[in-house]
Image (cartoon, rainbow, N blue to C red):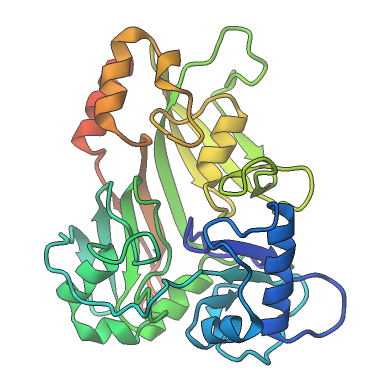
Length: 347
């Protein structure tokens, strides 16, 4: 059975499925080949990276933990990834990045014990440092809050991070405080997938008679997601080269100018909810990449959406099996006040 990868939205710059060729290939050679194919498809350059790295450079990336197989770091260039495995590549910053604690990043703890921390991430906070942002991230706030012991848990540049949310998505995350908890939580994203996250999304209203309208009260979107063929910096529903993606949705409330939806993920693909809702002609309000332009909204709503300044997506509910007790634990994060005010405008 194919293993479902952990939902690490936007964490990997590139994701590939290892070809089913049957021949064994060194990891550094395989990464170079796949990146070259990606560059060829994008017109000769790698989006967000530029030139294709040399094999020696890729070997450095591998040794530093920037290449993962099924979301487990593999630090040996000579290792071979099994056919069908998910290969994730994060492009490291141009210079060596030193993680420094940052006490200015507030940590809103919802629950904490010796093994883990459940927190409510505010919108606008990047989860971990990268080429686009090296300071003021959630990881640096966690180092200040939990101490240097966190550096020993999981990935060196993402210590304790089991999954993540986009910068402009608010809501619940679980962070591992021990390596035992990290391994146990990561496994829960694999079938039978015992971790459950539910999101609330405010979406725009659909034109009357639109074939993609949410006519039922609930349903399932099961469409493969991959790199957008026309814009390699975006994701999209694709007919070839994509990975299976499943999103369950339920209408919480039909608003005057849109819908309030509850969504849960059966798989974890980059931008999955945002892409699937766009495909259903119900894009998330305020989404700068997959949403409708503000000019398409009623005049009375444009100022409110502009003031909100992000996609109206909130990770509201989180449940999983506790690594120590094995019992299910569940948490709820209230809708942020500014998102609640936006919902009222659409109501």
